[in-house]
Image (cartoon, rainbow, N blue to C red):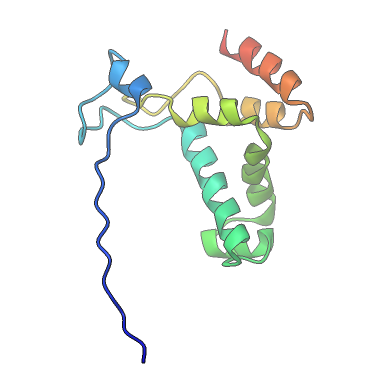
Length: 130
């Protein structure tokens, strides 16, 4: 005899300490602008990687069909998952700007992702931020 029981899970979301301490950070629920484009594209790359890992997409061609993109663009986007984890975190926590414009371009970040060594990536990232 099978019986199903409901399980209730409750949790509280708290803002990241980096965002909470930022002078330009908005209060919870308010967005002062748009996230930088590079942040949006990295988040998309991580989501696409998850779709592939779960088997919901078979390959980049599937991702392209699902997202209405060409395969070349999907390849460009997916290159961002090769960034060192600390660089990814830094990019994901960039603060929103009124226009969504940020001085670091996606193209520049993709070039860094093309470097094989995370140490080389970190050096290139440090010089790009200056």
